[in-house]
Image (cartoon, rainbow, N blue to C red; front, side):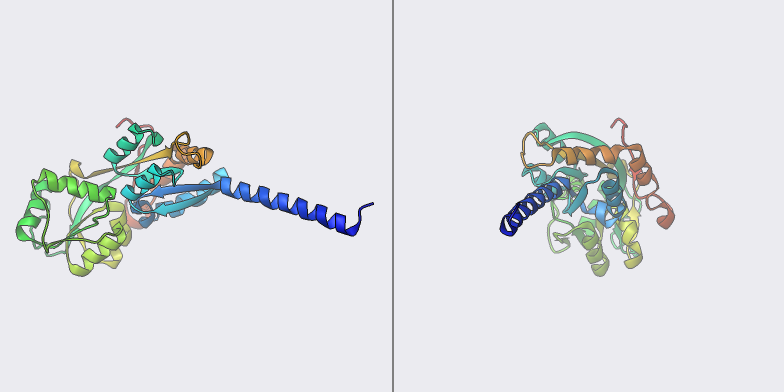
Length: 276
């Protein structure tokens, strides 16, 4: 026969074991995704997260910080998977063994937006000529200035145009795409944005697409797993599950139609399995 005290001790031990096991399960079930702001500002991940959680049993934690900061998280082993759009940096961390299983997921494009009166006269010009015109007129340009994929794309265009942007007309917000668009609208300036974020926010701001369709403005997104062999704390199975989820036919079908009902066009175009 157990005494009351002995029974309470046994029950306490069992409870502690159960709580410990439960804690381990929760930790193993969390998948940390570091991603660019456009995937959240557009609303895409609001749709995909519950689907991923339901299909896999994992709990996706989304850290939306821009591609540069997301890749930096991967380099520190602070994320399990990355969904970003900065190809040169992606290739760099893949070559360094930080990222594995890198796969193309989708694309959309960048657009140059600005006030309707278009003070620099850039509408429908080639990209480099448009950026030159902005610099020559010293028309206000808002840069994200945050080492994101969009910021890297913008800097690449300035470089090709042979211009080092500087001066009062060139202002860095140091924020995500949504916030930068709001500043551009408030100050009546130009900015480079991904189309998805612009379409998601256009009702709330007076900015127009002035330049689009140039091959230079293609915007490609990749998903990848942070290498568990390099970082012991990475959730290897969870990271792989997210990569597999993003390229699965069912997810690609969601991406294919996302936004079409509201904006008259999809915000992203699925690319899984295609050659680049």
